[in-house]
Image (cartoon, rainbow, N blue to C red; front, side, top):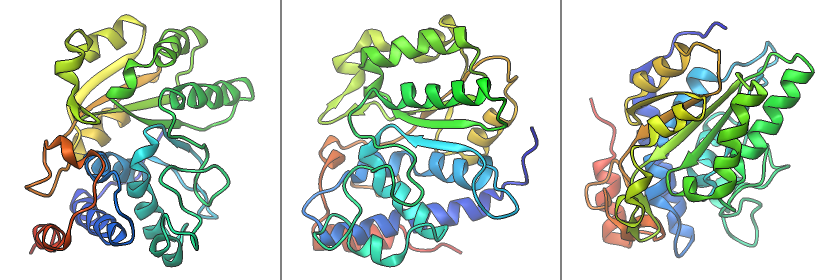
Length: 272
């Protein structure tokens, strides 16, 4: 499988724009999942601009599921950049006049699965990958999950089963920011770590990278062997990009006030 060139400098610029767009969306609602959206921004950008292939008609040839559906605002901002969603959709996010809710809904432009009930995305992605294998479809299925989500039993059922089914076109990302809701995952579930050897023991090819290093994420996927389903454990920072949000559990579900909004927009301003 061949991939086109991936411009990391352009990605960094887009990621600042995505975070700023998310902050603009926060003006319309009392609270939103800023921290978890910011932690997976680089991962999502790398998937959409670097990994997912597009046909001559501009349509994506590969599939994507955002299993950590509470980070939908980051996905919406990317889909607006790609002109799959329009400005009205973003500006009416979570309002009676809009069609975008806090979690993705299948049937909306660019959304292939309804998610938000954690633990379902990997199973859905595996089903899609199995379909493609049975019908000999040249398609990769990408899924982004949260580290807290890996506590769901349904996830580990699929972690066990996907290699047995030979789902080698399945690529999963774990947004490993070590925070779930209002607690540190390493405190609540210390035996959950280390993650990568557990995935390898179940038959996956797995690698751990800096999830805010787009080149590392891109290189990990493009250099995989393709002989097994693939997991990328992306070490990230919840609230990445805004100093007062980083690694602060309170930003799991909150919108910034006016002063916080202005500071965040200044920190995310375009850099020379």
